[in-house]
Image 1 (cartoon, rainbow, N blue to C red):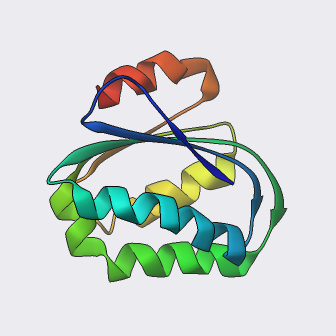
Image 2 (image 1 turned 90 degrees about the vertical axis):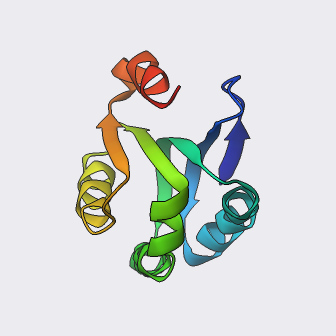
Length: 122
């Protein structure tokens, strides 16, 4: 489930994902993320991905489709994206996906480097 975080900077939209990664949970997450994307001219995104429980490959596919469908808006509105996770496969997927969305300065961090990630998006 996606939970909104406050990093104390109005330019940064921050979230934490913990729990199942299913099509249903992805759709619920989009109801929290899309209003932020639509309402802002420019932003930096900070995302922590903690423990993932149940996992559906279809949810990954939905995430990839979302990225390609909204590529222009994502590219035009997001300057930096910090992904914090200790899940290697999540880092690999993000690094692969964001290579197809030029213009977003995306970096991945382990939880041991959480402060570095937060500084990156500030």
